[in-house]
Image (cartoon, helix red, strand yellow):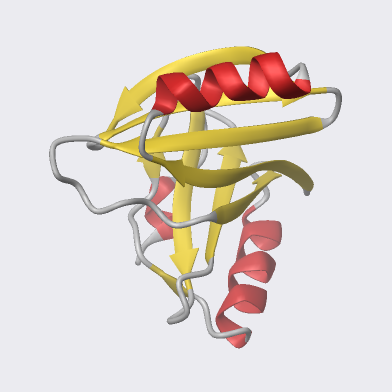
Length: 130
C-alpha cells in the first residue's frame, strides 16, 4: 500500500493547472475525462495532486485521499474493513481507468472521501462490490 494522490474539486481546471505550474513548479502528468468529470494530475517530487472539474451539471466531487494497492485481495479487504470501521461507505462500483488502474470510492457523511486504486489489470472487479 502506498500514497497515490490527494484530490480537490475545482471550478476552472485550466486555471488551476496553470496556477500549480507557475506558482508552485508542479509538472502536468496528464488531463483526462471520464464519468462527467475532467481531471488533471500535477506532480512535484513525491507530491501528486488531482484537480477535478465537474462537467455538464454533475455534482462537484469531494476532496479525497487516494492510496494504491496491489492486486492482493486480502490487502484490499483489510483496507475496506478499516474504512468501514471508521464510518466510510463504499459509494461506487470499481471503475476501469484508461491507464490500467481500477478505482473505487468511499465517503463519510461529513463529505470526506477516500479512493482505493488497484494496480493490476487482472483484478477481479466482483470483489469490489458496493
